[in-house]
Image (cartoon, rainbow, N blue to C red; front, side, top):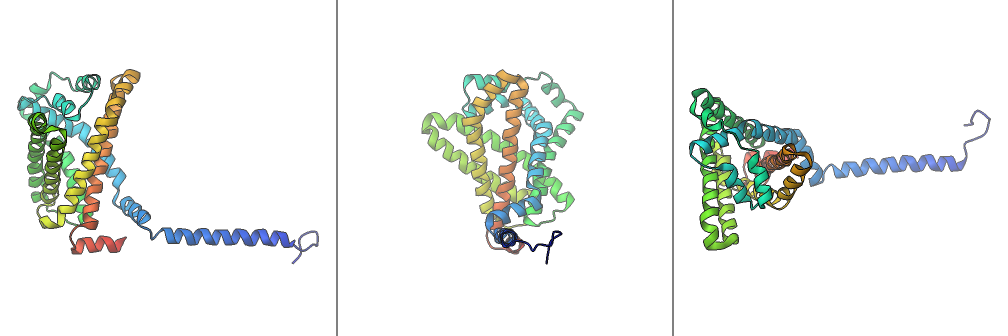
Length: 289
């Protein structure tokens, strides 16, 4: 074979081409091996499930719908939810002031007294419950009947109110007596029970309790990690962002935390589905990956 000038390709050019082909083959082989490692398998599975999209949907629904539900419930029950939140989180005085100022709204009590307002608030709370229920059903491969799923979502909303109330009561009454370590341990165990119960309830009791233990523990661990981030890092960020950009800066920090909460809740369910007690669903997820 000769080129346009009648000369044969040099051995050096042959060597370069052969080296490029060999490197391409090695890269393909490396990718084929990497596809069967657990990080890539997990990422592929999470992409297929739509983890990031669902987590952002959770955060958006929480701000637009679920937060008004909690504020109205706290007004009806004469709770000061924003103040309780910052006390529970251990914020500094400045961070506590910045956070509570975001929730000052004199019309909450009036809205809660109207039938239309109550319907709107319940529908908003149902939005977050529906997001979680759809995710749990997708991850565990369960199809939940509409009528039964609706009842379980409203049941779960009542459980959320009870869970938050117990968290604040434990923090207020146990901390002065037992100290921070004992209080944190009791609140963690309460979180395990709540998320374990949430999985069982939102799945309409279609899976046995023992099948969901790992999911409850994993979600509680990730939920606690988000809480630590909120206390140790977000508090300082709220102050600095509020000073730099005004209230919108504090809102952006809260949104980041809520996205993290959505990721924690979603990942907890995936971990429970993969590593829970052996069942056809768990085996099916392992085989798919």
